[in-house]
Length: 188
Image 1 (cartoon, rainbow, N blue to C red):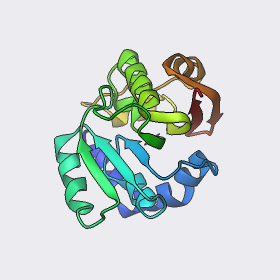
Image 2 (cartoon, rainbow, N blue to C red; image 1 turned 90 degrees about the vertical axis):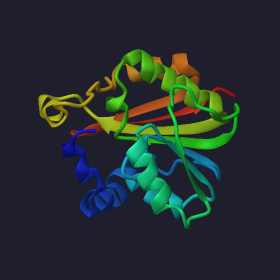
Image 3 (cartoon, rainbow, N blue to C red; image 1 turned 135 degrees about the horizontal axis):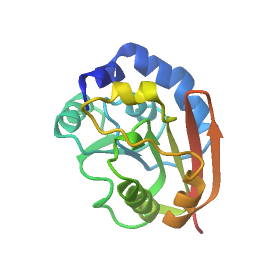
Image 4 (cartoon, helix red, strand yellow; image 1 turned 90 degrees about the horizontal axis):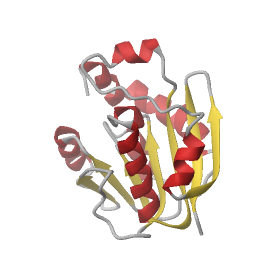
């Protein structure tokens, strides 16, 4: 991620995530007791989940961010940080009771890789488990913030079909002026 993303590690971003974004996106969805977070970045959502779910596993592809999170959560036995690629998860099928990915999908370089990520998350979720996801809506302003970085925004209009192909059903996508939120459940 480029330097513009350092704000994602700020106290202001954590508070915005905790007080506004997370509650709106989660919308009272039960994630169960063994939750996967894909792409925690600087850890704003992991901070919220670490005190609200019994077990949290975060998969981060960036070496530096994974190391920072490992150090930060070293004394939190219910949080496990894994340096890994969410398009090829090293977990057994049906391991997790729920999954989240917040404001990170636009960093996945291609639609095909995003779809592989969705498929892998579906594979490691228990039948009927929820995926809760959110991201910004594509815009020129967001593209400028990603100069020198990957920027591949997810089109919320195509998201239901993409999630269905990955193994989800009961899909809802809600729009906000700044972004979208989706909830989907694995097929039972």
